[in-house]
Every structure is written in C-alpha cells, then in structure tokens.
Length: 128
Image 1 (cartoon, rainbow, N blue to C red):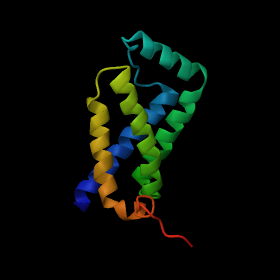
Image 2 (image 1 turned 90 degrees about the horizontal axis):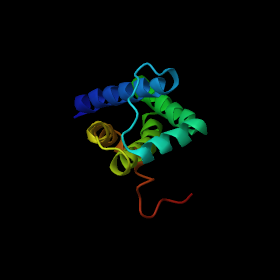
Image 3 (image 1 turned 45 degrees about the horizontal axis):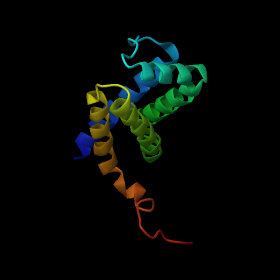
Image 4 (image 1 turned 90 degrees about the vertical axis):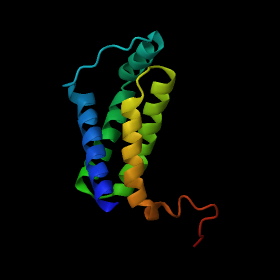
C-alpha cells in the first residue's frame, strides 16, 4: 500500500503542479465552456483575480506533494480545491472524470497519512 500511496502522491502532485502553473502561464489552452453560466463564472473569477489564489494553492499543494514535505498540509489545501472542482463540474460543466481521478489519488495518499489527521477527525478532541 505504501508504494501505491507514493505513486498516487507523485501523480497528484504532478497534476496540481502542472495545472497550477497553467493557471499562471496558460500553456494548455482550454476551450471556453459550453454552459453560459460557467462562462460567466470564469469571467467573474478571472476579472476579480480570485483565480490567482486558486491556482497558487494548487501550485503550492502540488509542490508540497512532490517534495514529500508537509504532505498533510498539502492534502488539506487540496481537499478544498478538489471540493471546488467537483462542485463546478457537478453544477456548471459536464466532464467529471478527471476530477474523480484526482479524488481517488487524494484518497490513496490520505490513507497513508491518516494518522496525521487523527485529532481533526476526532468527535471529542483532546484538550490541553
């Protein structure tokens, strides 16, 4: 399981690093979305510069996963990104398969680092 998790960590890190960089450098041009609401959403996100934060978190999370340092932090950051990606594809744009691949990879990495999240996932956390 450790080998599978390590491979998943590298794949997920590579995925988020490439797409995070693409948000800044636009080396993988994407066709405009077919849904007019998705087009309005992208317009608002890009004109408000919110996209820069979104892509920066993707890039930082991806680089952390690739480096192997602060992996639980990277998983936490990328969980929020994955939620937003899934919500967008479920509500505004069809084609959820790449997002589901990323979720499966995230789960595989999470399973390796689940002890790091024990306090967060406790119903009654320990108090100091």
